[in-house]
Length: 266
Length: 266
DNA sequence: GACTTCATTTCATACAGTGAAACTATATTG
DNA sequence: CAATATAGTTTCACTGTATGAAATGAAGTC
Image (cartoon, rainbow over all chains, first blue to last red; front, side):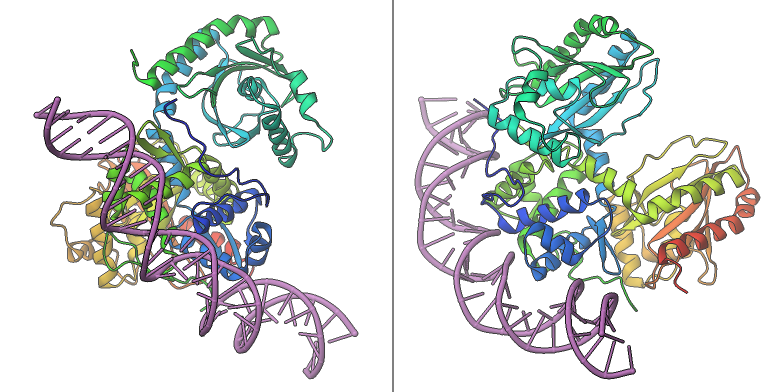
């Protein structure tokens, strides 16, 4: 047991609340809400959505604005330009992303399929790197897109060893994100997950119709993996067999990545 | 006088300090420092760089980590994946960026040159949108890159009506960013700025050698503009005259953008 | 193996963050 | 256009939280 801690609370809507650094947590809550709502928000909306008083919300917004994390026009607030350099910094300096690029490149050219790296964030996953294959995907997913863990091979493989409670929260998040019907259950999800002994996941027509994919998890020192890499193709350009044939290559890539990260542990 | 306020302080290194929301300001300071340092940082480095105690820094990092804004491996911290969805949200929802895209597109196809939109952030500028022209730029600038205000047409035009004190700070930031020599002065900068009555700026070989550009500011309701659009070309593909010929088109584009933003004010 | 440096926990204190209330500006309505 | 409702902002007194010094524990260095 070395790294990977969870610290305070889960920060789910209202709920039991986390403890540490109240003002900072609240600020990040406001910031998150501003992203969720996909258009400029008024002060009162934000205050209501985050369950805090207007004065508090206002003060937070002012500080965020001073740092460019939030912009204001008239009475409406939105995410500010300072996030762009931050994102650049992440993409250029994060060891995982940086070392993943050449690895994905090789897998893509080896298999001719699109290779992608996802990382888990809360109860969702986001695309952080991609190298296109020969057949471009119809709906291209730009970097930073939030996707459900419930749909698609790259999501499901990250849930391999998830507890029932965790699945519940994942399902909740997927519904909140509009990816699953409101009556979708953790049990229904479990039935779609790969067998516990499987080290890869397969999906067809799950997140997007006409798209096939396989994925493996990138092991890390801490128990549960939070990254996965996948091979994807439009259904016209590949069969299930084609994708499954790529799994060994994908496994090797994941292992290589894992080594690079843990930094020659031996 | 409607929008655009400055609120608290400038948040320059150590200095007089701003007042409001101390813990939040400090957290954003840590976050900024993590970007500046272009590789994983240890707790003590961050604490020292930001001038705060280790316990405080640690608490801040933990909260940021809970929200995915920071990642940790062993003892080193870096920017986390949560910035990617934030950047996406900005690029897709910010009214300026969204409405700029088609406008830049038109200018680019009209002139055959590369059209870019910059926004001011603190004492620097960052690239937020770009449409390439016929002759691609040798050194392509990816979105989110921090650039100095002192170099390049798109930077200088934003300094048109800057005070001496402001120029001083801009120069300081440029030196800190490694863009100007340590003995560079505000006076030297002023001599490079466009005449006060000019509404556009020109630059050749300033920020990058072999690159010519012209830029105009995008007027906004608040006095000083904080956005500019530029036309750029490698020197082999265009002359000063070619660029200057694009200025009227650029002016029109800026005016159109400005209208879109202020939302049919009349 | 002794020493230095760094990460983390504990804790008492001060002050920063808080919301109620008052006030102002801006929509909304009759 | 006055009257009313809603939203934004400022003030202020209180309390809970953010704070760093000191103690402890863990790594790394010599």
